[in-house]
Image 1 (cartoon, rainbow, N blue to C red):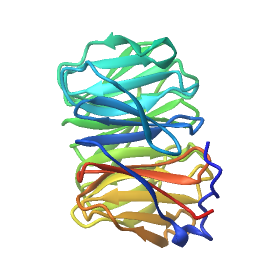
Image 2 (image 1 turned 90 degrees about the vertical axis):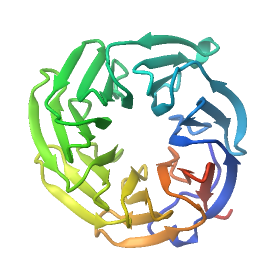
Image 3 (image 1 turned 180 degrees about the vertical axis):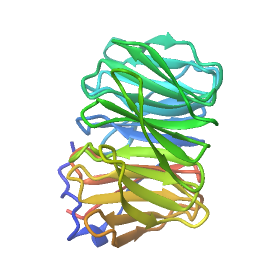
Image 4 (image 1 turned 60 degrees about the vertical axis):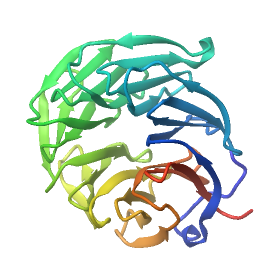
Length: 301
């Protein structure tokens, strides 16, 4: 875990780049829940970096296609990877990266999430379905186009899925019933859950907005006109006070959740920023870009 200062609303304008590494074709960055490692998904598998020095510790390889998304289990033991090869893999980091393959989707698996209680895995696929794996299995149907992302929220009782049909659908995890449908103006690229209030999600969309939704009421809480040509990623700070967004304008922007005010812009990437993630202690922000770099941002001292 980093000893650096936590990024807050008050000091957010002091963020600078603190580390960088090269990695080809990046799709997702995810921290381990304890903050000591950063997992980076891409064309050649899942690269694992030790923090804070971004030291490459290993690469989980074997998928027959690009890794489109990853999730890390609450105990940091398992990484779930979703691939264009239509499968998911569950990599056991305590057992030298041994893995289990989950098969069932008929097209690219683009999104994956692990439930807060570590009993379920959800996957979102280009085959227009969401699947649940683990303690119970289900196939959730209703989207009318390719799916890109999925997230557990509201204490793991609600599943949010988004995709090319410009909607976010909220499902009852227990029954599989459709609870609500939330509308964007173009396809939804990523859904992030607020760690401080997991009834709130943020969705990054090609419609150039990041919208914050209440998954209990279905109300739109914030509409952030975020990134020219499209928003690709969003992620909340651990205390829920800040929201980071990234997109096709090559920028990372930070927003106050309570007011919707833009409070900082991070420049440096040369191509679209495809993924952002705050560290668990809130002291660092990781980003991955089409410029084939992973960058870490933080505060001095």
